[in-house]
Amino acid sequence: MRYEAITWERLAETLAGRLDASASASAEGDAWLKVGIDGPPAAPGDELAGLLAEALRTRGRSVLVVGTAGFLRPASLRYEYGKRDPDAYYDGWTDTGALWREVFGPLDPGGTGRVLPDLWDPVRDRATRSPYATLPPGGVLLLHGPFLLGHWFPFDLTVHLRLSAAALARRTEEAWTLPAFARYETEVEPGAAADVVVRADDPRHPAWTGFGD
Image (tube, rainbow, N blue to C red; front, top):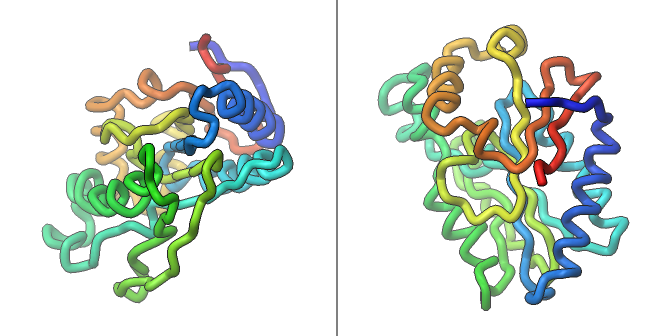
């Protein structure tokens, strides 16, 4: 896999240009675009989502940014097998059913566009009770978080922020989660599954693969 150096700002502008052109050329110009920014907490997925949202808004696109951290299950479910179980972290912490129901479902063809931006506050361990946000037709959903690939989420574009095993170990505060990311690499192969891969070993000097088309 060949990488080309790029800045985060230029990456966001390039992705925004592709998405804007795709939406404009679509036969269903009023449909919503859905983008997944996949990567571990050690990668700057939320920062990239913010830059991409800004770049899209300057092009006249409505954008809603959602993080999977707002869709964690209650502590009683997350910690059923202990607070440091990597398998539970991998496939049991995020409420994927709620993401399908509250985020993707309203953006199906003929949907309402009323998306719940978050559901659960993991710090206070209670529902956030956030109001629904309406994403108008032609808008873009940006969902960021770990382990996004492999769930059949209906993304129109996926970006995987890749860290080498050494960089991931060096920059991950919760070392007990590392086996979960190793399992993800083995079972999902996100580098092959994503439309765009960004090498983020050094966050100051990202590099990307291009769109591969």
